Length: 314
Ligand SMILES: Cc1ncc(COP(=O)(O)O)c(C=O)c1O
Image (cartoon, rainbow, N blue to C red):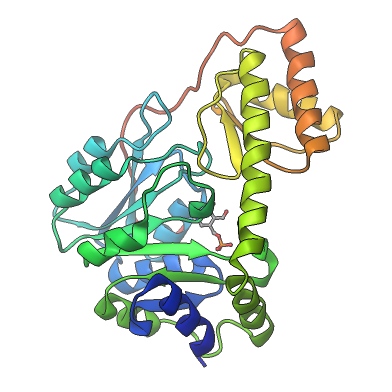
């Protein structure tokens, strides 16, 4: 009913108790369930912005208010700013590492220094959807062993290529896991999805090959774009972030004209997901042809002030 076989496999490899692992229909489902279990009307949830676009939605579904703290000029989490945003109403802080869509990573010592200053009654939801593609050695599960208020979310959607089957897992202290488990629908992960995730989990060499192909493609994209003068950020995910400001839409259109789809965020930048070499080269050609006629005179334009929501469902 609760995916015991997959839970046991995950717990064994990660060397945690099975009671500390919960699986669900994608990590987004588990993130939402955790927010529903621990937050609600009258409470606040802090996250960085720009980050994963589902955060404002799931915080709204839980009935809590969003507190969005702008990224730094380096497109990274402003951990100091997030600490400053804590109020007596704060119940949870979401930390996306590596961050979607900027790919930026938090150093282990920075995260530890941050966690040391977060009151222990506030949950820290560490979203590691892109963990397998990281460039540093930060391991949320190791962190969660030391900080019982940390909940780590990972997924079979990215490095395992099983997004359509909807399987994610979380690792945390047994008591938090028990509370989140109470919000799970029975048989929430269907038998086919569980079998696929178990098979993928049992084949780490295969996953390593995928991760290596993706990180090679990422390096290819990063170095070619840097050579063209695009201010890309070093990425620890399966995409590259180009903070091209007001050029985002035009660059997206240029990529589409070259037969590839990228994701533009108005006046902020373009996220390019690593694909096949042919697609990467099409992106590079598209950027090259755009830059032939236009100069990138503007970097990422992001909102500089903390935004506090009303806690309504939108
Ligand atoms: C940062 C982040 N977290 C979570 C998810 C959700 O992934 P899933 O629900 O497929 O596990 C995504 C998907 O894009 C993501 O980018």
